[in-house]
Amino acid sequence: MNNSNSKSSQGIDRRRFFRTGALVAGGSILASATGTNNVIGQNNSVKELNQNTQPSGLSRRKLGGQLEVSSIGLGVQNMSRTYQTTIPSRSEMHKIIHTAFDNGVTFFDSAEAYGPFEVERILGEGIASFRDKVVVATKFGWNIDQETGQRLPGLNSKPAHIKIVVEGMLKRLRTDRIDLLYQHRVDPEVPIEDVVGAIKDLIKEGKVLHYGLSEPGLQTVRRAHKEHPVTAIQNEHSLLYHGSDNDILPLCEELGIGFVPWSPLGVGFLTGAIDAQTRFAQGDIRGMESRFSPENLPNNMSLVSLLQKWGIKKQATPGQISLAWLLAQKPWIVPIPGTTQMAHMKENIGADAIEFTTEELQQFNKELESIHIAGERLPEFVLQFSKVEAPPKI
Image (cartoon, rainbow, N blue to C red; front, side, top):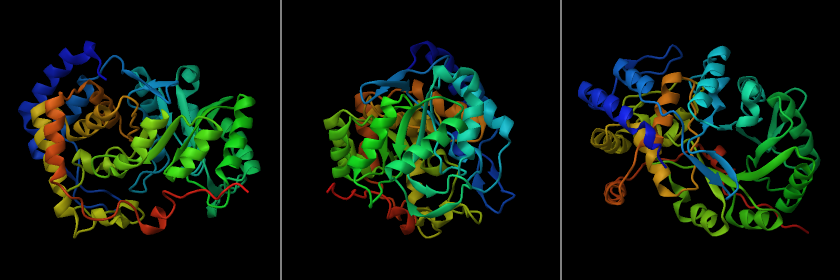
């Protein structure tokens, strides 16, 4: 899991960071111009840590026993629009993508729905000079007009539509193939056998190399895997929400499927960027998640306290502890933290160098068991698209 060549320099810089007391202080308080109040950010000491503790390369893992990727990927979802609704600098997003690659990241995650379309364009531009050295993942499945980008009601995984979507993806990503194509959500009106049939056609044409599912129902996974091996499942999974522990993860282990946690830092919560007084900007989906409501936040801060405690012990940031915990679960788990800030990207990939001994992991999990998160992970209108089973093939 770890890059042994980087441990010495990382340890020195983390000790310097530890002496600043920044982990205890939690950083400086920032006020967002878009209306987010009292969001905890990183102070200069954290930035110094991020800039000086980077591994020369990341360890590698395999999804589905075949697709080799860096142990930590980069989610580019917010590179066209942040949670706070601001528009990031396009050139800076390209720099982050380039720097991630220079530091060993070979796994980049996007979707047609992000933008829509615009994030795929940003990623395609960013990786153009090293496309053949990285793994590109993207997702289809929401009902989006392919000419205008207008979001239409519901989902659309009709085979003919999938093939049209992929043609647009290839153009936006500036590539001739998609390394990993996910069904973003299971379409309750299209048998999964028909979906996989369309993907198999695309695989035969060389336009898709591997495929996966996001937030699927268990039986749908089994049916899909029977038609053609599923390479990866992508679900929300983190210390804040790890609902896949008792269903999807055992199924992945049984079938030899990789697991890619989205939102592995709990939309910023696990980094210490949110405190009990945080309120969110209009348009920020976190403001609609009851786990971040004024009533539930004070209770849920106990998880951040646990991460800060272990951060001091391991001389790491809370976010790094969160990602290292995910990496320690299984060798086929590959988190894809997203960010629009260079320092945060560097901090995230630094988690690859953090090790938990067996005893430490047992102790951490024991302490984790006593923490109960209040509130739902997503609004109900979004949750209804998770764990859906595809209709039977007639």
